Image 1 (cartoon, helix red, strand yellow):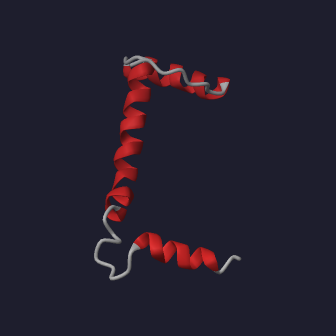
Image 2: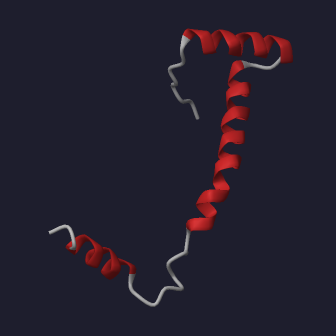
Length: 71
């Protein structure tokens, strides 16, 4: 899938230099960078899913109670 991304000229030039040095396309470097970023940041998301299921109180009711303090 194609995606349009705006990059500063200085970063684009650094990508050009790196792509020539590694003999891979800029697109491949960007794919590798995105893949690495997602892998590094996935753990935090996985840890948070389902965290509320062991609580005795309903999550929505808890949220409503907290927000009622704002009134």
